[in-house]
Image (cartoon, rainbow, N blue to C red; front, side):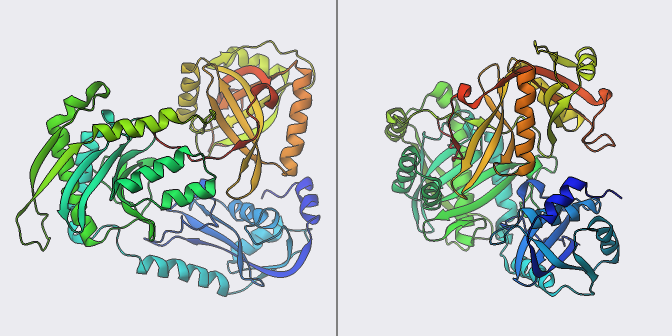
Length: 541
């Protein structure tokens, strides 16, 4: 059994000990139970088909830490969550060490007894955990009372229309400022204004605004460079129906699958309203109106798609007789729907972007480093560096001064296919120019970070890690990093390795190494970005 190292034990013993009893447990997620929206969950560790780990303060009745992990994960996971509950608890908790811990599983009790020795924490077994039981009942009650995402009588038809929109791919020829007016005159909707998302490859779908005022107001507020709090208010202030598409890699149990079982794309239906906020399910009339709108949009794109190639957006208008959806209680068999382009509005919306004279803010991409990779800051001995220069699949050479204990490196370890894909993307960008740590903040929650950035030769910036500014472990690692970079004349390295789930996890050997990039360490002053703040990214041209 792996135990805590001495440094960790000393750090934990420095935490104030509070006279509290904490409950801890690990339970499988039942079918249909989704807790991914809980603010207590770390979304980067979320596994919807796995086990939920909870640590709660029974004295205060608050959740201190929570994770969802694959069910095959060992007992180490419950310890990792416990350590976070002690050192980095969720609000309103403060860093602390409990006086007593209770669990309801004997095997967990025996495991924790070995790990937590010398931490002056009493560990007991109890047959029931009332607070955790209540939390899980709350999860289940919320799931049981939640309406279905789509009305059952219209679900299959809507999924078929969503599949049709995906195949039509209107975002290949329409920008999100090129608005289509769809006159429905039914179900309290006179017209909706369709804004197609996806031309920039960020998020695919269509927003169907119930009024032009809502559409224009949202765009004006985005361009005003408002705070995150104001942006969230603006986002929730939109008045529209929507259909968006999510990648299958991020698939949630509550997201309905497309008709095509082999598809990796799933549709998400919903509505936004200033008084209701965002709602991820539809009522009957909303489902009916979407069925008719999507069919009209499909026919319009099939008829006129070629007219929009080359960024053209001429004045076009067509009327269609759309059959009333099966299951609708409507007195007529078909509805007349008119679809028209709005070229003048498109020019007006595009002009908003051109007239915006706000300073340029760099976009930090976070899609280069694969999710759930193992990441560490360390040093590679010079003998190993020399071996890697001739053994790895890809090597970008540098001119480091070989002094000190070795080359300071960032290690990113993932699966073999993902490691290869990452290296290929770096090569397509011309290699890596440098590695930098830059201050960052999230004004929405008040957190401050040390952001690890890779700059590729084409000038793009890629985030490889967010480290809490006051984390003592990272502070010490950064201090050593700076000292080692001085000895190498400003050189450091990026190591990409495979073997994430094998025995070499966290300590890859030479056969696991895929690439070595020897690059310059760039200072934050040299990069000239200043304090980076997290902002909303908007898919606009």
